[in-house]
Image (tube, rainbow over all chains, first blue to last red; front, side):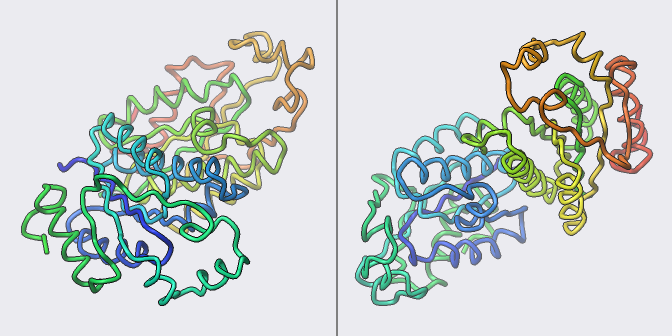
Amino acid sequence: MMSGVILWFTGLSGSGKSTLAHAVATHVGGVRPVEILDGDEVRRHLSKGLGYTKEDRDTNIRRIGFVARLLARHEVFVITAAISPYAQTRDEIRRLAALDSIDFVEVYLKAQLNSLIDRDVKGLYQRALAGEIPFFTGISDPYEPPASPDLVVETDKESVRISTSRIVGFLASRGAIPKHDGA
Amino acid sequence: MMSGVILWFTGLSGSGKSTLAHAVATHVGGVRPVEILDGDEVRRHLSKGLGYTKEDRDTNIRRIGFVARLLARHEVFVITAAISPYAQTRDEIRRLAALDSIDFVEVYLKAQLNSLIDRDVKGLYQRALAGEIPFFTGISDPYEPPASPDLVVETDKESVRISTSRIVGFLASRGAIPKHDGA
C-alpha cells in the first residue's frame, strides 16, 4: 500500500493549475484513487463568505490542506489547484502533512505575468488591470513564489502534454506512483 | 470493494455522539478504513467564525457533509458526530450522498432532555439554563428529531456497549460492514 500524496500546485491565475490537475489525475487515476481539490470549488463548499484578504486566503488554504490531509491519510492521491499565494501557509501545510506521513509535493506553475495577461483565458486580467477586481493576485495582491519547490513547470513555455509528462515522471521517480506508469 | 458509508449521528449535546463514534470506529476499523468527523473538530478546522444561527449551523453541517462525501467516495467509512439539529439539512445530505452511491445511515441518539441535564457531563446544560450560553440546542435553540431515522439508540437507557453492539449489528445486517464482524 502506497502512502498518501498531496500534489500541491501553486501559481498565478491562468497558470494552468486546473488543466494540469485534470491531466495528471488521468494518468494517476489508473493506478490509485485520486481526488482534485479545486480552489474555486472548495471556496464554494467550504469557504463561502471568505474574501481575499491575507487572513481569508490563508483560512481558505488551511481548509484545503485539512481536507487534503484527511483524504491522503486514506491513501488517496490528492491534487490541489488553488493559487495559494503565501509561502508560509504552504509550508505550514507541508509540515502538517509530514506529521501524518503524507508525501507533500509542491509544484510551482511558473509563468510570466505578461504571458498570462496576453493569454487572459477568462478575461480576468483585463478586468483586474481596469481596477474592476480588487485583491487580484499578481496585479493588486501579492504572490510569493516557492523558494524551493519540489518541481517547477514553466507553463508559458511548455505544452500541457510536456508539463504533465514531467510531473508524472517526477512522481514516478519519487515513488509516489508506480514507475512503469511514469511519463 | 464495498461502497462508501456515511454513518450520520444526530442528537442533543451529551447524547453520546463522540463516545459512540469512537466505539463504532473501533469495531469497523478492523475491516475497513474509518474516519470520524467530530462536530467540534470540524468547526475548528472548517467553520471558524461561524456562529449558531440556523444559517450558520446549516453551513457547518453542509461542510461536514461535503467532506464526508469526499471521503466516502473513496470507500472510507465516515462517522459524523455533530448535533445537526435541522431535519431538512440532514435530508439534503442524504440526497447528495445518494447521488454519489454512498450509503447514508442516519442514527438518532435519543435521550430525554431531563436525563441529559441530570448527567450534564460537560456542565454545559447548567450554563445554558443559567442563560450563559445562547442558542443552546434543546434549551434555547431547536432540535428536530428525525422523522424516519435508519436506527434509534436510546442512550439514556442503554449502555455504550449495548448501543455500539446494536449499531454494529445494524450495519452488518445492511451490508455496510461484513457480517461476521457484526455485533
